[in-house]
Amino acid sequence: MSLSAGPETVKLFANVDTGADYCLFERGFAEALLIEVERGTPSGFSTAAGEFRAYGHELTLVALGVEVHALVYFFENPHIRRNVLGRNGWLNRVRLGLVDYDSVVYLSAYDE
Amino acid sequence: MEQLTTHSATFSLSGSRLAQVVRKPVRRSRRRKVRGLPIWGAIVPMPKAFSKQRAPKGAVSAGSDGAASGTREQEWVRSHWREYAGLWVALDGSRLVGEATGARDALEKARASGVVSPFLVHVTEPSELPFGGW
Image (cartoon, rainbow over all chains, first blue to last red; front, side, top):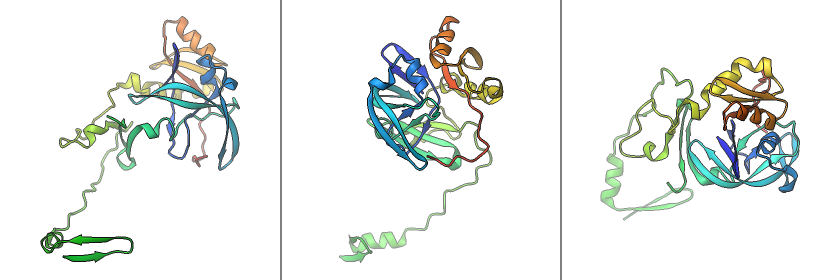
């Protein structure tokens, strides 16, 4: 997938996470896009293993050929190495089907 | 008119419709044994998946070749993580075009070598433990 902020674009690997409320990315990708992480909208998040803080920024995501403009979050902690496509901003913009048994993903934009 | 009641809903069926339902032959399960799963799986655009003419079996990428989907970059990371663990690397297919301790520096090295939009990967040692979610 790719993340774009203005003229800057980076490509990265991310996992679809139906349990994540938002799309979350490593802090390093914000730095690669010349985004000042702490200037975004702060928010706390909870997980099974604890809590963390992240900052929201409006970016353009292109994942598997589907482009959306959405609020995504970057971890405050540079040591967290997770990149996930969550519900708000991505899963709620697409139609997604998964047949794990066959290793097949069905995907389109929601309004396609 | 006949009333069928379940725990949570009531359905009304005419006599003829009920007969059709009753006579409907039981379909055998469509589930089949998959002999060989595709290595990278497949991504099927949704309209094709549910159109009358189904997407070809065993096909399909989402309009992207290996270069766009990152399969070659993933292979590279699997092969070279030991040498670059902890670093950010910029990859163009199976070619390393930048490495640095920071993502921006790796990206700029890639651009200096003529690759404008490489894959950026923060290389880590793969865990031997199964992933337990968050």
